[in-house]
Structure formats: C-alpha cells, structure tokens
Amino acid sequence: MNACPERIVHYMHEYLDGEITREHELELKTHLQSCVDCQAHMHELSNVVAFVKGAAHVKAPADFANSVMARLPKEKSHAGVSRWLRRHPILTAAALFFLFMSSALFTNFNEEQQFSFTKQENVIVEGETVIIPEGQVVTGDLVVKNGDVRIDGELDGNLTIINGTKYMASTANITGTSEEINEVFDWLWFHIKDGAKDFISFFEKEETKK
Amino acid sequence: MDALVNKRIKQVLKGDKDAFAEIVDLYQHKLFQVCFRMLGNRHEAEDIAQEAFVRAFINIHTFDQKRKFSTWLYRIATNLCIDRIRKKKPDYYLDAEVAGTEGLNMYSQIAAAEELPEEELMKLELQDRIQYEISRLPDKYRSAIVLKYMEELSLQEISEILELPLGTVKTRIHRGREALRKQLSKQPNFL
View 1 (cartoon, rainbow over the protein chains, first blue to last red):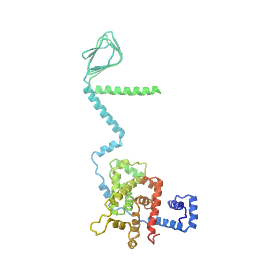
View 2: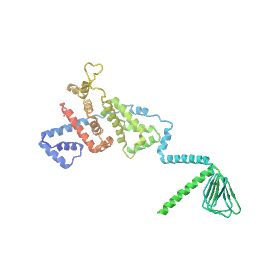
View 3: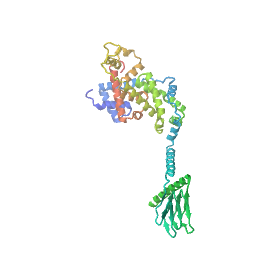
View 4: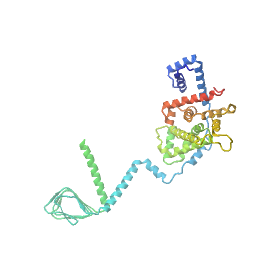
C-alpha cells in the first residue's frame, strides 16, 4: 500500500462524499482492481459510513417543549417598548430628534433674556431700544431680541422682534414683512419656519448647482 | 416549512411567546439528537438543547429571515455543545490521586474512558457501540460527522453551521472517517 499514490485515498473520500469526477472515479476503480490493500481500505471506509448511518434516530423527551417554554425569560414590562423601538428605528430617531430640539429651544427661549440685535449701519441704540432715525434707510433684515424698535426712517428688509414692541412713526416704511414674537409657541414657530427656509434654500442651491 | 417558520418568528418578534412553542415542536428532535450525539449523555443533551432554544428565543431579532432557520439553530446548539465538551476537559492534574481510590490516578480513569476492554465492547448493544465510537472522536471531527451522517445535512449546510470553509468541512469529514476506521479496525467483527 506504501507504493500507492496518496491521491487514491483522497479519491475514496471524494467518492464517499458523492463529489468525485468521472476521471477520478475511473482512476480509482482501475487502481482498486489491482490493489488489494486499497480495496480493503475502501471497503473499511464504506463500512464506517454504514456503521455511523446505522445510528437510530433519537427523540427528545416527551416534556421537552414544555421545559423549554418554562425556561424562557419572563418578559419585562419595558420589553414591549424596547421591541417597538427596535422595530421602528426611524420613528425612534425622529422622536429623539424632536425631544432634543424642543428642549434646546425651550431652554434657549428662557435663557436668552439679553438684549441683542442685528448690526446694521445707520442704526442708533438708546438703552434697549433700536432706532432707525428719520430720513435714514437701512438695507437688510433686522432682528431684535428682548428690546424695542422705533422706526422713524425706512427699513428695506424684514423686521423681526422677539420679546419686544415696535413703534412706528408716520414716516416709517418697511418694505419686507414685520413680525413680533412674544410667546414660546411663536418663538418655536419662528424657528421651524426659519429651519424650513434654510432647508428649502439648501435644496434650491443644490438644484442651481446642477 | 420555511414560510411557516418565518411567520412564527414574526409573531415571536411582536411579543407572541406562544408562537415559539411551535418552533420548538418543529425542531426539538433534531436539536436534541445533535446534542445527544455530541455529548453522549441524555441529561446533558436535554439541558444543552433547551439552552439552545432559549438562546434562540432571546436573540431571535438577530436572525436574518432570508436565511435558513435550522442552520442558525444548529449553529447555536453545536457551539453550546463544543463549549460544554471543552469545559468538561479535565483542568486538574492527571497524576493526582482520585479520591476514594487507592493508587488510582486520572491516567487510569482516562484510559478507561477512552478505550473499553474488548470483552466489555462485545457486551455493548450496537446503538451504544455507535455512540461510544462517535464520542471517542476529537470534537472537531465529531461535529462534522454527526451533522453529515446523523442529521444527514449537505456539506454546504454543515459549512454554514460550523462557519467553516467548505474545504475545511470536507477535510474534517475525511479525517473523521479515517479516525473511525482506525478505531474500528482494532476490533474485529465490525469492518
């Protein structure tokens, strides 16, 4: 048997796996006809397969399924929630987003009690009042937080007042829109509109790029 | 059957625990058989097969429903069996004397477990004899041989269960057959 090529044993296993090519099978058969040792080897391997295949099917004990069900972990009350979250990842992300966004907005609203305004030329500030003097023209938007606005001249743009009042002289002129925001919900609405505008202009930019 | 199983899995995912009972019913014998052939002990096999189902239940959301459920289940079970076999391997000193025996150390115990004397072998029923020979195979070959000849799975499926390349699975089956041939050729009447 020492003289036999190693591949013959390999072919035997290929044959037993049912994955032997025609050429290999032919070579194996020819070899087996002339080699008693390899014949015995092949015979023993076939017997091994028959021996192992002779194993009877074993069945699980009768109460097996019940025992498994009894071993399953009891569902915790929050398991339903976590499963829902797992099954709806996008809704979960959206909910989290709104939670953080709204909390950030509310805190901003309460914290930003300081007087601030958009820096524009030709604007005078007296105490916490922003004044556009008579005869002056301010170009661009004006946002004033926590302060009042007195317009004697002209504003060529939008005016937004948060937590404040607007005083207009008869000579006053605002070319854009003007709004006063004094409540939390107005504030929120303003932010949403602002965000939407940015969002839309972003897409418009994208399109013009194309 | 796959369609039914996937339906039950979806129910389990929605929180219907009872739908899992049907899955257990469908696969209990297969899983118990693998564990029994791997471990050679009904008690342990029952424990590990049950544990496999519990793990499957806990991790069911990680199962990809485009794949075959039985493959996934077999993988959990064979991994648990192999862990158990490795834990059973003695971590004590072989030459330590066994309590309650005089002059008997672990060497003689292991030798006894590895190979029964011929007269004892002759007394074994065929089924016990098959299990005895299988249990003497190294666990690498044992899992491949059990899945191939006792569960009658394809080489491709075995490679997916054991997470091994097809070539490695074939080698393990070839070596397993050769190992069994050597084990059996030492004793007459079988080959």
